[in-house]
Length: 232
Ligand SMILES: [Zn+2]
Image 1 (cartoon, rainbow, N blue to C red):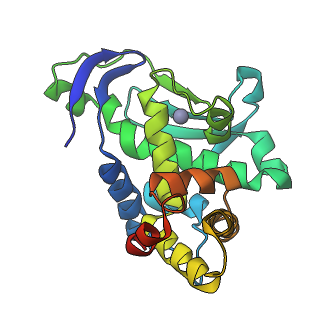
Image 2 (cartoon, protein in one colour; image 1 turned 60 degrees about the vertical axis):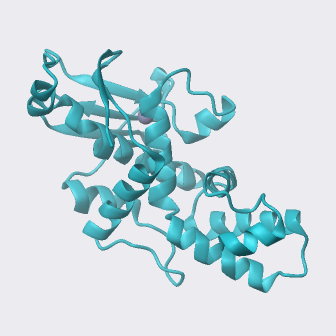
């Protein structure tokens, strides 16, 4: 279910998604691109998700002077562009951040590009913006540093949630965590959670912080053992 409200900052209208809808959007993109991960091949090819899903590749620019690492540009003519800070692709130590930032920008494309299309705006009697719109993003890691606060930036929360769902699909994380639990049933709850966080980070090629937050989103790893067994 989506609900729209006019006049919302740089966005002409606001869109609401449930968490399940965002999860479904990510899975649909992975299915469409034949990129659904498996236990044997758990790392999602995020570049291919953009290229195969939308027939574009990311552009690179020095975004550090703007204090961001990624951006999505939505043009008046309906086209769009994803831009990443060049430092992310040139620095091998930034691979995880590159992946999460690109997945975040894909989230904007999937969840928000229709908000800049005349046909959508006409449905809600909204005048299209007479200029291109650039969504400059604090990426996921920046948001973590800000203690997860979004200051009303609903589009950023949605894009980050999409990033989690794209790089760490629920069905995969459930399988990974079940396997980790079966192989480490001698550990206490905290030990299991630590293994799960590291295991997800490793197999999905995401930061441990991203993995920890994903476990919280899915309510895995911080419940008592009886619940954990049921959850998995
Ligand atoms: Zn963003």
